[in-house]
Length: 138
Image 1: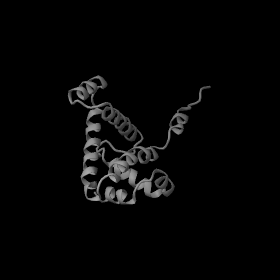
Image 2: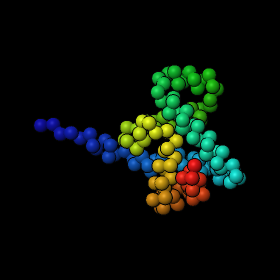
Image 3: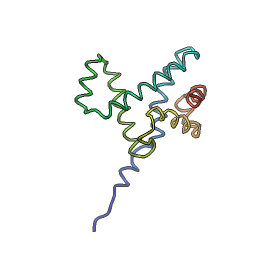
Image 4: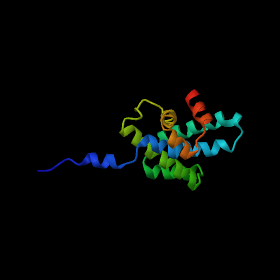
């Protein structure tokens, strides 16, 4: 008799919402805290565009993506960031956290909401309440 153990694979992965806080919000937080607060909204809009680009690129074959990265003269850091975002968006869609019709930047709102629920995580990552308020406002 065979048992279905596929639930163990999913259960062994870290919570995606926690990953969004630790990865995505932490990166954005590092960037905005080095800027004057009046430029935070513009920076957040740029991150929304990056998420939209990653969502569009996820529908492209990996080899074609590499060609595009070269054509656009993207450095290794940006390529790595986009590839990680593509994986995160794919996982969010697979797990039902992000619906197919929802824009990828909705992940920012989900991460901010989760961060507010987890004050311990918020403190550990050093994420600004001001940033979360801005994300939830826009």
